[in-house]
Amino acid sequence: MVNMERHARHLLLPEVGVEGQQRLTNSSVLIVGAGGLGSPVALYLAAAGVGRIGLVDDDLVEISNLQRQVLHTTSDVGRRKVDSAKETLQALDPNLELEVHAVRLTPQNAMDLLSRGWDVVIDGTDNLPTRYLIDDACFLLNIPWVYGSIYRFEGQVSVFGHDNGPVYRDLFPEAPPSEAVPSCAEAGVLGVLPGLVGTLQATEAIKLLLGHPPSLCGTLLVIDTMTMNFQKLRFEEDPERIKITDLSHARAMLDDPDWCASPSAPSSPQKPNPAVAAKAPMMQSVSTAEFLRRRNDGWTPFVLDVRSEEEHRAARVASCNHHVPHPEVGDALGMLPKEGDILVHCRSGMRSQIAIMTLIQCGVAPERLFNLSDGIMGWASLKPDEILQ
Image (cartoon, rainbow, N blue to C red; front, side, top):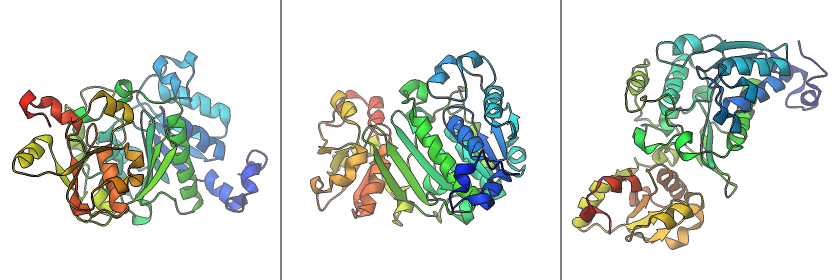
């Protein structure tokens, strides 16, 4: 039953009203992760009147979490996150039905946990392998899910699997090497960033529950809070992506010791598949070693560095022709050659793919663009006489 006084401001909205609020009351959402992203998602969904919320998280609250994980307080340090979260959410709305699972989502329990009547699943995870697991399980169960990721001052949001729309593997066919994706503990994260990204995730979830088309289905929202630049990049289904019939692909990744050696696996925004986004042929990638071989054979692409100003000042490449931070690459078309190949690089090959995605949508021919797949990190393994000159 709708609490008319509690949800009075929703009832005034023609897009919600009594009928919409009743839909929220009757709806169920599963949130995987009760940390930085899961905190604002859970709080705002509970406040919005979602009737049933599930939480999956096996971690304990640590003092370093409190900079951004607003479900928890200092007195919760050492407690299970799901217990702390349950207490906070029930204080917000005692009528909320909460289902908590103090476990890590795994291939062994994913189908059971996700098949309990959830209308939407929300990603609040802290590692890439679990995202692939969520994507595969939601695909098999035909459940839409809302993706979010954070890294330093940057975030990404999208919606996958809505109305048979594109899925995570369409945009991110393969995970980068584990060593190329630093965790928040290694790279840091602006404390308010999960609040921004998580609130956007909750917004898309509420629209799904109300029956309104989500704005970010088939769209990747890329956020840079340093410049307050918001980019929306379109993508579609990839006809060449792997066919998912079970969880074996996700299981293989989660069983990889390089990915799962520590409980705090990498979580930063990942490299999109720009070919899918632009309806273009598969994007071309080269490793540092391959670039050197081709350069020795006479290949002379225009080298574009899309790292931040700080990174560029700290370590420059003599052969770089131009530098522009990746959020601004769409404004730098005049600096690029009209013909010839362009090699784009960043730290690890992720932001450079976003830059290529933008350049394709700005009209640069995809066959001219090459991504340095291992980024500037690839140079560290080279001998001194092999380093790019």
